[in-house]
Image (cartoon, rainbow, N blue to C red; front, top):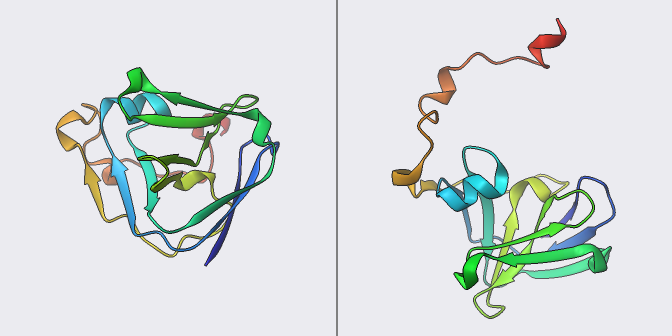
Length: 135
């Protein structure tokens, strides 16, 4: 399988060849800070290969206190980007950075003990096609 992705501003483009073994929604405090949301949504592969097509010089990687909590991002727009972890043995891809469909569904929510207090029963919150403030 081949996946293409990019950052929000379009300066960075990449391609991934191979399959993802796992897809988790992580509710840990660090992933919530990284995303500004309820959880991170990351794909994982020990075999897929990452190739940067453009903008590689605009990528920065942050390793929180050398803890292994790693985030790569575009220095222009701040979008989360793929990175290699565990000495290059694990490819971690933010699902939202892909510009194509993904053939694997999330397999679980992880680190639920750290989830945000407002992250309950979100499936019951009203849904709108666009920002309701515009109406």
